[in-house]
Each structure stands twice: as C-alpha cells, then as structure tokens.
Image 1 (cartoon, rainbow, N blue to C red):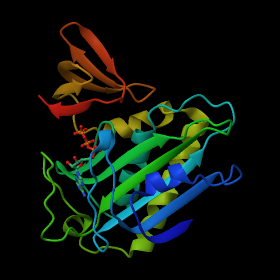
Image 2 (image 1 turned 60 degrees about the vertical axis):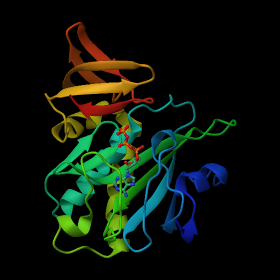
Image 3 (image 1 turned 30 degrees about the vertical axis):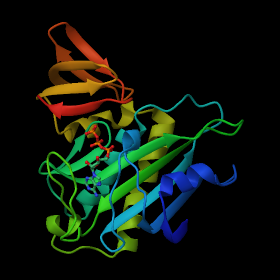
Image 4 (image 1 turned 90 degrees about the vertical axis):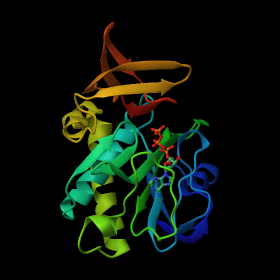
Length: 241
Ligand code: ATP
C-alpha cells in the first residue's frame, strides 16, 4: 500500500505507473485528490479532511476472461464493510454508486489496464464521503450524504480503510474463483431499484421498464413490453422512471 498527500486521481496514478506483475494487489491512498474522475469524464469531488479516496489494483490469473460486473463487486464489498460499522439503509445503484436513503455516499470507478502482454488487471477506485464541508455543492440529482451524517461515531480513517479493503479483497477472491454469480444474490438484496420502473439512457438509446435485477455477468435486467432486456454497464445511466 502507498499513501500519498495529493494527486490528481488515484486511478490515473495507477494507470500511468503500474506496479510490477508480482505485485498482485496494490493500493494507493491519497489524502487529497484534486482531479477525481467519475464515468465519462465526470468529476468526483473530494476534500482533504472530508473524503476517503483510494484505488486498488487487482490482477487476475493469466488467461482469465475480461472481468464483468466488477463495479458491482466493489459496491457490494463497500456496502458490507459499512454495514459492519453499523450503517443501515445502504442501497446499491447499478452499476457503480452506493446510496443511503437515496442519497449518494460513495462512487466507484473501475478501469481495466490495457494488456501490454501482462496479466490482466483492474483498477478499482473508490471515493467515499466522510464529512462534506458546508460549502460542498455537488450536482447530484438524488442528493448526497456523508458518513458523519449517517453513523454516530466515525471510525478513524485507517480503520475504515482497513475494513473496506478486507471486504473488497475477500469479495474479489470469491469473484475470481466463482464469478459474479456467487455475489449476485447479495447485490440484489441491496438493489436500489428492485422491481421499480427505470429508464436507462445513453449511447443513443433509451430503455424503459421494470428493473428485475442483475444477471450472472452483472448486466442489468429490465422487463419491457418487448421482453427482458439485458443492459451491460457501458456508457449508460440509470434513473427512476
Ligand atoms: P449516472 O447517474 O450516469 O449513473 P453516476 O452517478 O454513476 O452517473 P459517476 O460518473 O460515477 O456518476 O460520478 C460522477 C458524478 O457523481 C458527478 O457528476 C456528480 O453528480 C456526482 N458526485 C461528484 N462528487 C460527488 C461526491 N463527493 N459525492 C456524491 N456525488 C458526487
């Protein structure tokens, strides 16, 4: 694990300076992230004292297929770690957000490292709101929240990070062995849109229907008038319909 005072984005740091192949797991934590990224070039905002931002590089066995559903695995692991700290009401918004009572508490950005003849690797970035400053102005539709608001006693940052990494690496071990199917049920129990009307848009198309869950690859299943549609977590967004 490497802890640094400041960087643009912990995901970008790992993408640009990949640790050697024998380093199967590598974690980079930044006290301050000045250019945090969400999907499609969106910003992830964080504050030195008020956020926990880190990325974990995870290598798969040589020859392993391109992993699917990884952001769901990371979201589930984060949910489990926070639940063990007493946080109730966590819901997962497909594919990469963690909500509490409908407000966004954390975001996840998974990026795959280009092959370059090495063992395939994923970079899993997590941004968690610990204590947002009063001036924080985050343009998020359902609202945002922080851990300080949601649980009575905020554990020390190191303890929190250790708890999250424990769950993350346990979930990744299981995933590497058995695929997303082994975690699917647990993810669905926390699905923010289970059996609710949803609208999926992006990539020039729109799908409206009822969210029935996710499949063995972490694809979202939406029941429409034309049948069940399987949505892969590419460049699409999900909203309540
Ligand atoms: P979509 O709604 O398309 O699924 P998303 O919610 O998954 O997108 P991301 O790209 O993962 O969004 O994250 C970026 C978005 O998250 C920003 O556009 C902003 O709305 C929101 N955001 C940025 N910083 C924070 C933060 N600290 N806490 C909560 N939400 C944030």
